[in-house]
Length: 100
Length: 210
Image (cartoon, rainbow over all chains, first blue to last red; front, side, top):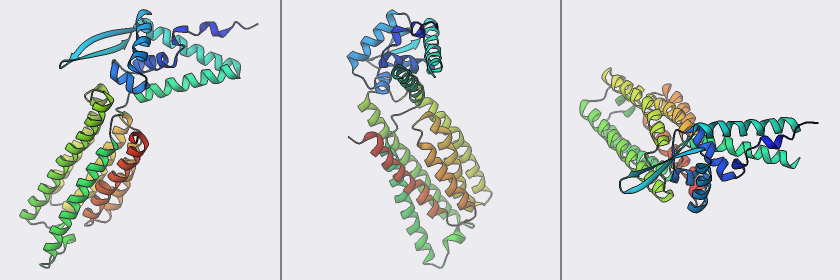
């Protein structure tokens, strides 16, 4: 009997928004809050809460800066985040291959 | 199987996001329309200028080869003003759009886009200057179209992928123009004018219409 592959999927990446954030951060050195908002097309509050979850899991790094007087918060992926997200992608791939 | 479809969707989402996030997507269709309108206006103005010369018995196709210095300066000035006006207007509409979306205009993606279009453009500019110096004015129009097309294709990797098609069209025009020396003004009006307007209108319709 094959081991249930679902256990390799990371629960943290279970939402479309978090998946979007991680994908964007994986290919860009840093992405600002507003850029993420435009890319993923979600409300401020929704995006902020998902970012918080990822930050608490230590998958992303937050950098609070300023552009003029406006706050400009940028996000970057952490080493742990990169590892976890890549493992998640591999698990997704394995599952699709397994079912075929 | 249901969950399989779900995972496939997730992978597709991820791929899309990686693509989109590494591109400058605030580029406004209105920028294209404005730049095209500038080019068309300049083409009409130049056409009339040359037509007035023709009235004195000069053929403008001949002028492409042996331009007098005063005319050369006039044409260069028109070209320069058009280029700057088109650039400013294009910047204005894209800036407005980025303000509306709350995206910083000077992000990494914008820098990447600018660099990757500027390199072929600057090289093209140097080639054009040299052609002018060497008295090969007839080759200037196709050279501009060719380098601009290459710049667009190169830049399209860092912005809306549709820019690539605008680039291919400019290349085709430029290549045809290579064998139709003397008709540069018409090719410019089509390439920089009409194609920009068509492209801009399509992009506006697709991404910005509300």
